[in-house]
Length: 101
Image (cartoon, rainbow, N blue to C red):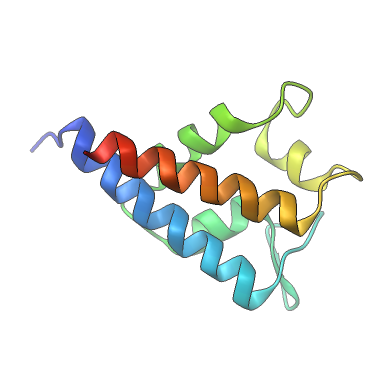
C-alpha cells in the first residue's frame, strides 16, 4: 500500500520528535553516530527507528545551511552547537506537521 504524502509527513514528524527527545535526554555528540555519551543528529534520527526515517532525513537536509552540504558535516562543524541541532529538529518537526495536515 502506498502511503499518502500526508501520512509520510506524519511519520516523519514523529521520527523527528523522537530524535529530538533522544538528543535532549541522551546527549549530543560529534564525530560518530552514537557513543556512550549520546548521538549525533543522524544517529538520533536512526535511533528514533521510525517509519518516517527517510522522509525525516529529507526534511532535515532541506533546512541545513548552504555551507553544510550534508547532515554529518553540519553536525560535526566546529561552529554547530547542541542548541543549533535541537532548533533545527524543532523546525523540521513543525514543517513535517504542517505537511501532514
